[in-house]
Image 1 (cartoon, rainbow, N blue to C red):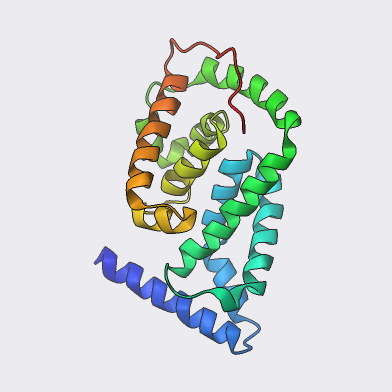
Image 2: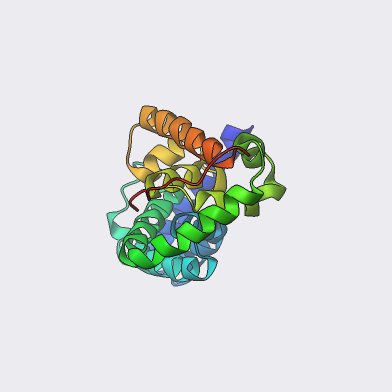
Length: 199
């Protein structure tokens, strides 16, 4: 049943793309509204700022509109759009440089002091999303990107692979490693690292 629902959603997205390419001015807006919420969550996870995430998502969706003719249907429209969002967020994140490093140093201290015991329980519980986001912002960019796709945007392993342009095996291994690093940060006995992970 879930697969049929996902297939129906994908078919609807593809029809919206076709309508947009045919000149329907409202179709792309409908597409944006359908995927705006997970796009905002993903961008906020990667860049660490809800306010900045809005600008990132807007820029990514504008680029998506310009590149709509490049969509080939090799992945679901949702994955294609979220890949644009992830790339835009990564570019923005890299541009922040040292300012973010100073913010993250303070944030890490705060997260370690108030962290829950088990990151998987946090991921599984939707009402703990805010606490998870604070923790994710202390991780390296690649870890935030992977966990953001899988657990914040709610993408399947296959959708994450399509969104990030990596094999599904890479998604599995990188997710496991990222969860391990997050768990180490969340453990009550964790200490603040003396070195910063490059963004």
